[in-house]
Figure 1 (cartoon, rainbow, N blue to C red):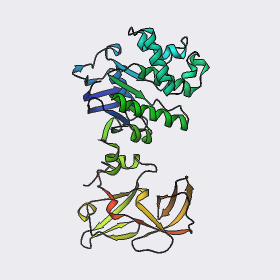
Figure 2: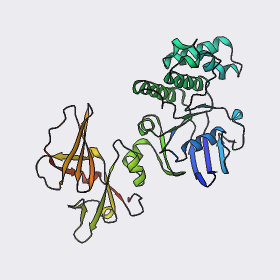
Figure 3: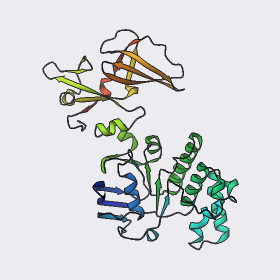
Figure 4: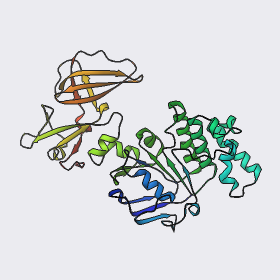
Length: 354
């Protein structure tokens, strides 16, 4: 395995700057997720690490080797593409074993390693078939198996689970997590699915418009989003963001027409133009309660082990998460009480106030 270092990386397509001078260090053995919406630059960054795109400027290093202008074949990376990229004339077993064959691994070892990884991804019974005879999900698992069967210095994943159904996605995700733990792979994983990023990554790199918004562990980013973009992107449902007005003399904060006494954290609150509170940090009441935001229930969504409730408070639609498999019976009018100690404060520039 090897570390990855990116310095001032820039890539432009026409008038669009896809990657805007990013810097990133990934230690040996770390599994990093590049997370963000479509067009944020995450796939372009991955393709530059793989050598499939040439940067306009900047440096990419794997280990102590500058590979910025190296050919893809000279980088010792394994990549799983979103569109499979399987060889149609080869069997599934031959597709998976091809990286080992071109490296001169003996036939018995190829068969052993191909069978092992195929069984872990539940395609062991498909090894004699060809790609055209497989479903999209089976082809995606074949592409994943082909990448991991050869233990390259760096593994690159471009939304590899996007075509799997929910059950197989969870199983493949578990296999990737197992591989990460057992082999200590250095991996870069591109996704727009925050649950995948949260479950798999040692660190998450949140990107927007070609720039890095925040880098941190999954819990760091969840608990302390650096700005409103990250706060709104991370979490399912995302953080509620509400306009706020502070009164420094009275030490109060007005949110959605209700004034809260701010005995704690007033230094942050007094500078905030927006506050954030996650759905699980709100409690819902059926009777008037002190420090409650009065609103009307819009919709209730039972999800099994929890219930998601959307409440109109003034012009705001606020999400509330209630845990338990018994959905609460609610009147039309309810009161929401935020945990003041769990509020997040953002300034006019959108950045977190700490």
